[in-house]
Each structure stands twice: as C-alpha cells, then as structure tokens.
Length: 172
Ligand code: AMP
Image 1 (tube, rainbow, N blue to C red):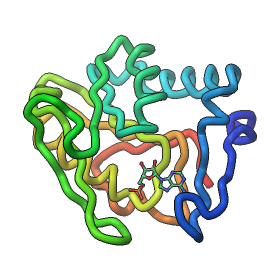
Image 2 (image 1 turned 180 degrees about the vertical axis):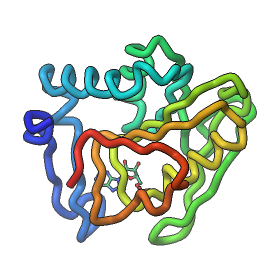
Image 3 (image 1 turned 90 degrees about the vertical axis):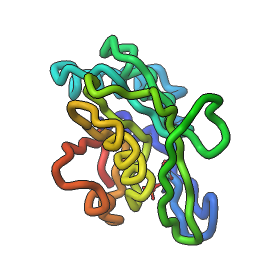
Image 4 (image 1 turned 90 degrees about the horizontal axis):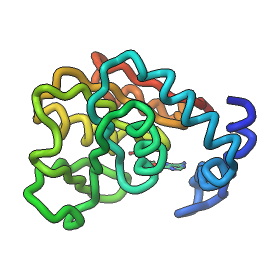
C-alpha cells in the first residue's frame, strides 16, 4: 500500500479552513495504484459470500463499483436526498453544522443479501453510521464495512456498531 499512499494528494483547507482533504483522484488516475487497490479490496472480501456492494455518494461509487465487479456481486448506491427515482428509505445524521440525510431504494437489499458498505474515507464516521442504520433496517444476513482511507485520529470507528467488521486499506 506504500505505492498507493504515495499517490494520495493532501489538499489543505478544502472544503473549508482547517480540513486536510485526502484527494483520491490522484490514486484513481494512476493505473498501478488503481490496480493495487482493486485487488486488495477483492482479496479482503472474496471469501465472505458478498452479494451486494453498497457505495456511498459519490466517492464511494468508484472503488465500490470495481469491488462489486470483482466479487461478481451487485452494486447499490446510497445517495443524497432527492436523487433516487423510486421509493426510498432515509437516515439523518449530525454534522459539525446541522444535519444531513442519505437515502437508499427500499427494494435495494433483501434478507438473503450479504453486504459490504464502501466509502472512500472514514473521518468522524457519521455518514457510515447512518448508512449502516439504513442497511440494518433491511435485515440482510450480514454487513461488512470498508474504507480506502481511515483518519484514525478522528476515531470514526467508535461511531460505528462494534459488532461490525470494519477494514481500511490505508490508515493515517
Ligand atoms: P464522516 O465525517 O466520516 O461522516 O465523513 C463524511 C464524508 O466526507 C465521507 O464520505 C468522506 O468521503 C468525506 N470526508 C470527510 N473528511 C474527509 C477528508 N479529510 N478527506 C477526504 N474526504 C473526507
């Protein structure tokens, strides 16, 4: 992962002052780095019987789709409000300023599914905690959670249910 790590670009004060934004576009545009993360993700989940990969809008769609393809699983998007065309269920969560909401199609996951929810970066964990709440309400057999990058100093894992297996490829 050292090669992939060397391709992550830090953007200071984006999207607001005080945030160091971990930009993965520089990883995705590099063929070797893209190849490495694709294989590493697939290796983590190839024996788990995953039937659906859930990607969180929008940066979770990129590697999430690749992972679904590699696992011969389906891909399901979790999106911001008003973007999904059919019936949805929603979850809201606290952000630093105010609240945010995410949605999933209500028929996207069934009780027969084994799900891995993927996002690019784990920061405070608020977004993923809301996504887990949504998926849990659909009662799949099992839920796994994955990130490419974990910002461990923000302790986002503590915001996630302790009975769920969480993996990340790179930790800062
Ligand atoms: P969280 O605080 O864990 O709910 O993060 C919210 C979302 O913002 C996640 O989907 C991340 O993709 C993104 N995010 C938060 N902090 C960063 C950061 N420092 N660099 C890149 N993405 C971030």
